[in-house]
Image 1 (cartoon, rainbow, N blue to C red):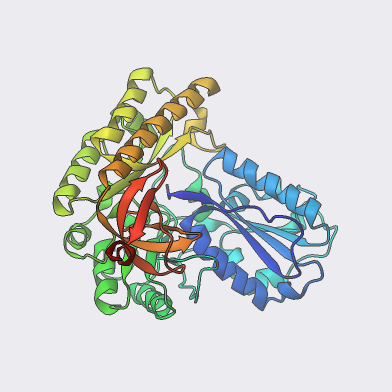
Image 2: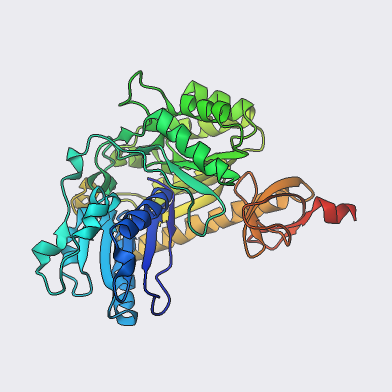
Length: 442
């Protein structure tokens, strides 16, 4: 499961043009830039009233609910705009979105990346069947390299290396939204990284749905570690290379060697753990056990002291007992996690977990709150441990940036996209407080 983020719905009426609202993972953020370009090439920007494109997420029922809420709000505030819905939620439940009066067109995950899909925008008042243009995602065999020059509003750039997933975790709907795993050819990834680095991006983030499966479908079956080493060797202009979510059980030797020896590969890994209990992991059809996760974190810390770990953990999976949940609570400390993404279990129709014995919603909410509290306590300890240290901070916006370990830091210096050397003077419980070294010297 990729790490998640949510983009805001447009505030108030949009100007004539194209507004893309992104929900979900970093891969969606990257694809939104491709969509914006293709929609512009199709002429949507010239439409009277403009267009709003929603790039949705299907990972939880709450993500789908938020998308629908944002669509209704956008229609109220932009009555003349054409509203297009795409992304994983549109792929997995197209007719639910097509049935919304607010929606003019529903596109699948493959269709959203092609200009001709937007040129075929139907007239107002068509029926639900005509609205939905969503093909079988499992028929897609390749993932093309879509070159982008920038990521709007971002200090760092995302590069897609892989799409889809061959695994069938019992809770996950994403393979039905993304299809089977397929990799972007290594040369195309390197060219995209060169292009973005040449345009001034100091940090590049490699992203995918199941990124550690990269290369299995390519000639010679290169692994993610080889890709990382090739990028760093062939693109010397890249100052910082970061990985998005990985599956630790698939981490290859080259990747571990790169973590140990390449200072430009950032010391931060976000792990797809999902649970800290072996029985729940088996019922999820995960491919690792809790001891393997703990041992992975211990081994990588020996290779790269100071590396920071984040993780996805689901609270309240079906059949989870209090003892099983406590194993997940303990793994926060046992793995030394500092950036926790907690998901209250949300049954997705069509998945095996939705047919398992469900926990009461209040129990799920309570356990999610306990996990978040454990994560917040670990994060505060992490912030405190960095007092007095020197950090390289990539400035993002409004006096905020990220360290190499992806820790949020307040720094009143530098332009967005600039890396500032600073010393940590303290923290406020949510972020580090940092002062530029130049200011310290003065």
